[in-house]
Image (tube, rainbow, N blue to C red; front, top):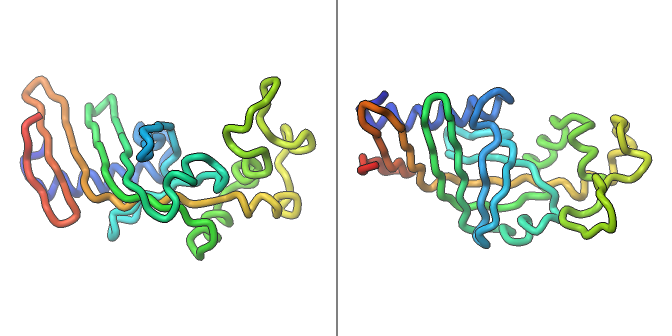
Length: 189
């Protein structure tokens, strides 16, 4: 695959940009791990190539939002099974609820996606299976007016990539590189 660390750095950025823009990308739904060792699949919404920042959407009432708050160590795991590339990210995450970025992310979201934030808080105990949505919102695409109360629950999770561990599996010999914000080095697989 690559024998140049600059190409590895570019490969990571290209994969993240593609994952954020394409639902068909195998890296579109990585595993996000919070500092309390809780892991979940989340959808990558954006990658800022200049600042090496990942963006996800979440519910401000979720347990992970409380754990992350205004800054916490996090990890994100990406894998492309066809190309056999794994990227493990370590970084600092934070939750934004009221910012220009959060407003823009809300405005860009579909009404079906926004509908999720109308429901009960994530993790609320129930006596029976439930989406958590109000009965009137089940199976419909709410109007902007109906969605206005949901905005207060919407949040953006941003993760600044401090280090990316890039690992390519190959019969010809695996390759692994550690790419930091200002550093890069080859390491043994």
